[in-house]
Image (cartoon, rainbow, N blue to C red):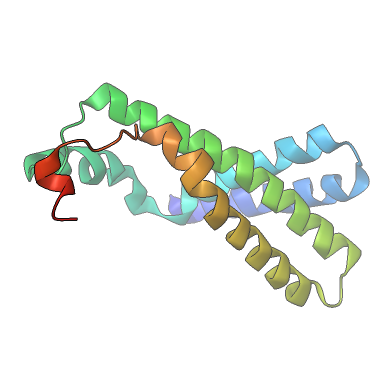
Length: 147
């Protein structure tokens, strides 16, 4: 079943790549990239369906998490939306690199990827982590004095 899904997804990817080359509409390119990310997520890792068990139920079973299911699912939705937004931008830029530099795209693509990685590492603590966590000042002197 997985091989059949991969086969049809690869046919779809070839057709969408040809269509992406023909069109210059940015919204269509964004839609294609998001579908590409969704399709590749669908068949890349079949064990990913156990993420609910591994990320929520097992963590609660061992006492490593206190969050209930609805807020946990909300956090997963926030992570998905951030990944789609940022991943779509990165994928569009990388497609542009491949289109403009067909002979040496792999060198320039690696450089662009490193730049994006550094950028995401810099913005994550300021913009992305506060979406998932609430930061407060630690005022308990029993904890702050030894530090």
